[in-house]
Amino acid sequence: MKYVITGSLGNISKPLAKTLIAAGHTVTVVSSQESRKAEIEALGAKAAIGSVQDVDFLTKTFTGADAVYTMVPPTFAAADWKKYIGDTGKVYADAIAASGVKNIVNLSSIGAHMAEGCGPVSGIHREEQALNTLSDVNIKHLRPGNFYTNLLNNIGMIKHANIIGANYGTNTSIVFVHPSDIAAVAVEELTALTFKGHTVRYVVSDERTTNDVAKVLGAAIGKPELPWIDFKDEDSFGGMVGAGLPEEIAKNFVEMGKAVREGKMFEDYNAHRSSVQLSKTKLEDFAKEFAAAFNQ
Image 1 (cartoon, rainbow, N blue to C red):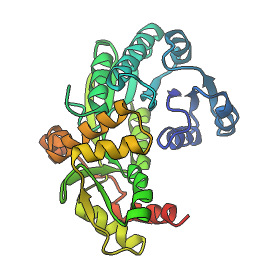
Image 2 (image 1 turned 45 degrees about the vertical axis):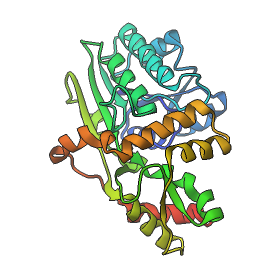
Image 3 (image 1 turned 60 degrees about the horizontal axis):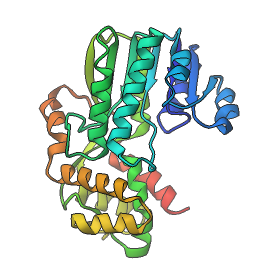
Image 4 (image 1 turned 90 degrees about the horizontal axis):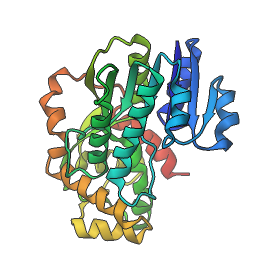
């Protein structure tokens, strides 16, 4: 089959492309960077270099595909982050309609049931809604948990202050996933193509508390007493801005943290928990990856 993979050579898109190519499928990888072309082609894929904000480029790229994997590339340059994410969904929808492709696996997020109050994930809600205007296209929205790999952003804090934390609250439950587990599910959905209409699938590797995170990661790096610290929203915002993040981005991250703390981000997931099969990568598995990065 013929597949188009957006997301360049990211933590999900690269293993997804490699697995599909190894299975004998024809794969085109979309990237905005010309410098990625050689590496994409080295995988055995065709490189489509252009912007996901360009309807004509996407239409041409999607035409003839049996299925497309869509995701919104991250950016810290948006003046209105939620709008940027939602508008990207509209561009995708226009290109999908014009190209005639009928099967889409879309990278969404846990918390995407929240139209407001969940930072960038409320932007992903808008992206889902934009795609769902396509009444004659089969769409599987993958809603993964919080990425383990985002915990790597805490390495500097641990090294300099011997703490880990966020505005989530201590002992708050968090739903985690590893990007490799998302890629595996995306492969499954893209190769089977049994989904019809517009449906959601949650992708989760583990369910743990913030205190568990501190304990497991701390043990892995030789700091068994590492504490999880609950930051106030205003302190979290100030810390991110002080570290160089734009205020728009920091504001949205704080809002998402509040949704985690209050449990709202996971409400729809919890309502469907009985139908979710956890993926293989547990917190203890990721701790080895975290320790390797910490000790570099």
